[in-house]
Image (cartoon, rainbow, N blue to C red; front, side):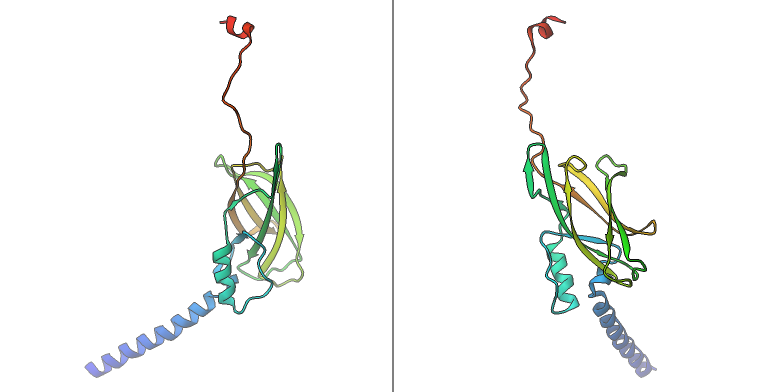
Length: 182
């Protein structure tokens, strides 16, 4: 009886190790690890990696949710975003919609959108870059970025646009008429 129980436990441990390793190697694929997410990176990613695990590790290291402007002069500001979207299932379309929403105040307010065209149907990864600029986008705002196909959101992320923004001296000047009108 004890021998059977010991063999059963040994077999159970061995089986869970084998299937556990299989799941770990499957999860190392970036399209599985980031399924349904958009990863914004600090810089453009290389076109090739040594392995799917190396790609996943590089994305983990390079991802960001705070974007600094590439150009900011007074009222003009521009942010260049490098992103990679990962889909849970293969894309069955050659066009996707990239949309941006301002979520700073807690509600989802549409800001801008842009169609993007994929190179091939059936892909689970789409990478591109996009430039965001004032006046639609502004500093110290929290945004949601979505990728949609046929009206359904298939990947999303949130991020902050940073920068100097407007500066005020804090000094207020009143005219004599303003001061007397009490």
